[in-house]
Length: 235
Image (cartoon, rainbow, N blue to C red):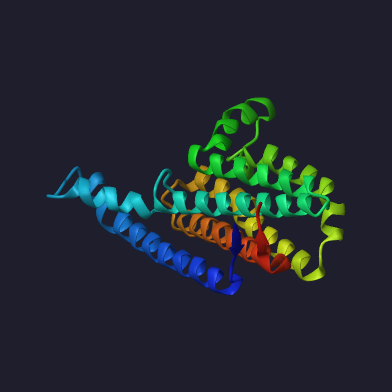
């Protein structure tokens, strides 16, 4: 079976989808803030309220189990698949393949986490153990941050073996993704704790968070499909 990709074309498609989802998220936020919330606060309703509310939740970046969540999980699955295929190719040519399989497992776990919100379960446990708040309001960032540091140490030598262009793309994608997934999540938690989940700054932060996560994953997919031109024959 021959598998080949055109990295730039694939990235353009993914980036176009991200822009569409970003636009729909902004529209959802505006409808929620200026129409739905005022009606709820005034205990009023209108014909089709549930339908409109459903559509808003369907594209809001801050909601779970909706279109943006599915797309993010899909990007993670694609990353896991590409890493597995590269690992299989390295194994076929007697190269060092375990690192690729390890990363494939990590991204597969993240895709499951994206759909099931496993990390949310760590918030209560971590807060109970460490008694944190403020920028650690979403306390899952602590165990995941530690796991990221450990992973970085483990894969340092792996990165050194890769071509420079691939390394740069890997680092860029990681920086963009981690900025969204962890670094923005911390001030986002502080805003949520002090001003609520509908504060304008919180809306901006979670929009940036999800946008950067999807963008980072798309860059990583571009990096993987660019690696060795990603034209492989799988037995």
